[in-house]
Image (cartoon, rainbow, N blue to C red; front, side, top):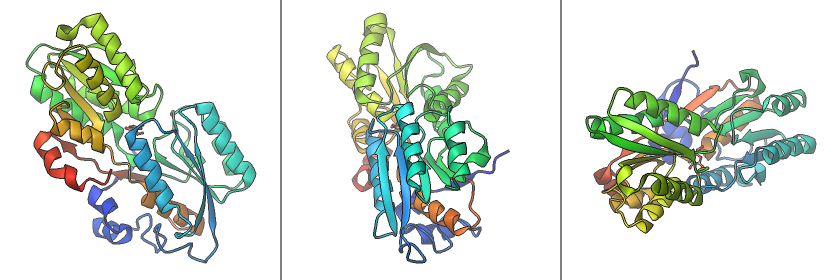
Length: 334
Ligand code: AHR
């Protein structure tokens, strides 16, 4: 079984190298003096191609900002950035172009899990290491050097456990706003949640993709409301905050009160989602931390320096009810 290394939110928010050392005495990405800060080590600029999914959500904007900040010229990088607008073929084309340009390393936030074997093999044959951030792929592990991201299944489990505790004893009709079909977070958040509510009185009456966007969440929720009516839906499980925010608009437009008439659980804990939780329009949020830039940059430097790295680096998430959101919101970084 794959070894899991969890890194806390505090470790990410603070000075990376110091906080990482505090987490464990084992070597950590960035702990060998090659954390994102501090230049390119031997003074050579490191050219990195970063294939981002797109700009579908508030989470994604925060993740892009974190990556651009860490892969800065000041930190010794020349970053070639590509956002694929959620188009898998375009993302693979971007990775091929990085290979053709002869970059030193490639970082990918893969839109979907499947379909990566060929281009990852091409990168390997070209001697260009690939680091995955955020989402995972189904390809063999020897095709990439390391991955840093979140435990999406655990996020789903945390959301489902809360739902089971709150609504499990009462007949509850639930609809699901799924993330992008075939993506690791959509797959794993469904698996974790479904297992956690098994045997409860929560019934999933419908489940459709809203593609992780606010507009997608809104239009899918409008369809659910048309099909089942306000009184036919008790609970929404949204795979991210943006879709929950879209659902809120649809519920309000239908004359109902989000968070009261229809309860909402979502994942991400970005600023707008947390504000909706404080305002009582969302009832519970599980965090998905987007601040992965420093860890990804540290991994790139370590891999290029030939240092041993943890192949799988999980960043730990927390969860928020209304009171916790109110306390945390003023200090949130995204
Ligand atoms: O892969 C992480 C997911 O992608 C976030 O939950 C979502 O908001 C984003 O678009």
